[in-house]
Image 1: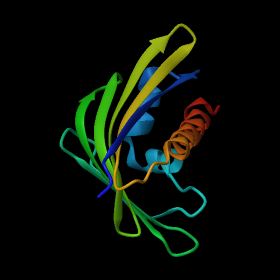
Image 2: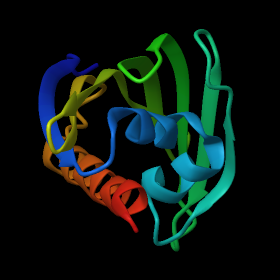
Image 3: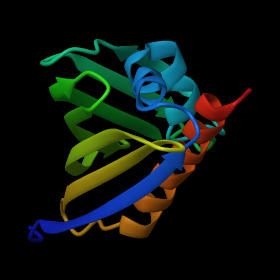
Length: 151
């Protein structure tokens, strides 16, 4: 067995929209699925979200080659318009890849709002994709920007 590898990253984004509007895009299942789909090119085969402390979010997708992706999330802390803390696990092809703790912090600014996302990861069995994970998160946040700042 390969030791578990630990790492983290922080991404910050600025929005023209208020913190309330950005937070709402995380809280509404239909809106969240539009911007947060981690494999937007293939789309989700299953998605559900119960946005409350202790609530679960489930995401399933199948890549073009048939490989399945499973993400299971639990919301640990929610402070309206201010903070969301969740833990999630990711598996590909039925094999556990990682587990993460994520904190998303929202704040109003003079020109709109700011988001600070911190992800702490534990990678299993030698799998490490930190650059790919970070890039995928950044792409989702870019879609979030388009979602909330659209006129």
